[in-house]
Image 1 (tube, one colour):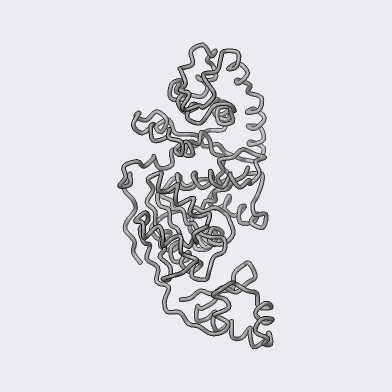
Image 2: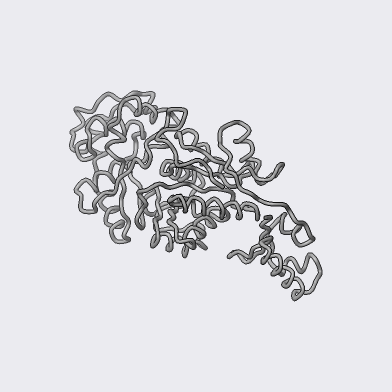
Amino acid sequence: MHPPHPLPQLAANGRGLPYKPFEPLNPHDPSHLYWLWLAELKGLSPRVKLDLLRHFTTPQALWSTNGLDLPSLSQSHNPGLGPPTPAQWKKLKDLDPASRLMERNASLGIKLWTLNPGAYRASKELADQWVEPRQSEDIFFVVYVLGEPVTGPSAAVIGTRQASGDGYHATELVCRDLIQRGFCINSGLALGIDSFAHRFALAEGGQSQGFVAHGLDRCYPSAHYGLMRSLTEHGAVISPFPLGTEPYKVNFLRRNALMSLWSEEVILIEAGLQSGALNTAEHAIRQGRRLWAVPGRPGSKACAGNQKLLSQGLAEAYPVALGPGVETPILTLLRDTPMSIGALADVMRVPLASLEQELLEYERSLLVAYLPDGRWHYRGW
């Protein structure tokens, strides 16, 4: 399997945003406090904040203004909110919340990466890509980090939480290929494809980064605390949200936008038509990232989302050889859903000893796999 080489700077639509438009901030940098203030500033839209940052060049310079020299802010970019009056601006300049957040970050070893000046001081043509309603989702003034983010090439490997055996196998092949090409594996620390991609990358000696939809003092799902800790030791965990933020459903959309923005390539392993992984694919398309999709088996409902993107020409096929299917009663059951050996024994009404022997034979033939969730999964190759 040899997909094309790493990507060009911009995708064919010419609307790509800069890759990794962030840079690490020294904890002792005096601008640290002002970046946090700007990021958590309420009452101004991301577009308006970006306009102000480009005008004043630094968050500290913006904070220092008395409000009399604020540029005119378009109502269309800040609905219902005109330029703050000097009195309103004075209230917005409270640094106490940012100071408390900075202290808590330091106590937990959380680092700050900020928007690269080259991104927000870019030409007006590039800046205009960030001002449409959906494009504002791509504006992140700061991101919070545990560990050491990889500065080299990285690829987002994403898919459903209800992965099939084919999906796990495809994840293994795709991750191995990416690691051999020198890519770090980005994913979302979720159940299914995401966590399998992280664990496989670490087991293979590769690098992996987890993107989460909550503050870094949380872990969702809680069962992945050990994985989150491993990623901070052998990669990084990255969040667009400050400490204390809970994993609300809407937060996953913003997490997905950041993960795609941080990645040179986005590979969709397995997604049904209702899979949340398709949201990350949508971000990738909008951001000008090159989107890949594993085709899956013809007619596979588990890969219906992949196949729709491919049929619409929105993604390129990432070839994965799944091999011929072999069907027996056990494999037929596991193809529908992963099961524990106890559940298999109950359904098939056979002794555990003989069932265990048959499963081990299938495992040696790479037809099934026993995964950390305690269930046997159909692999199908």
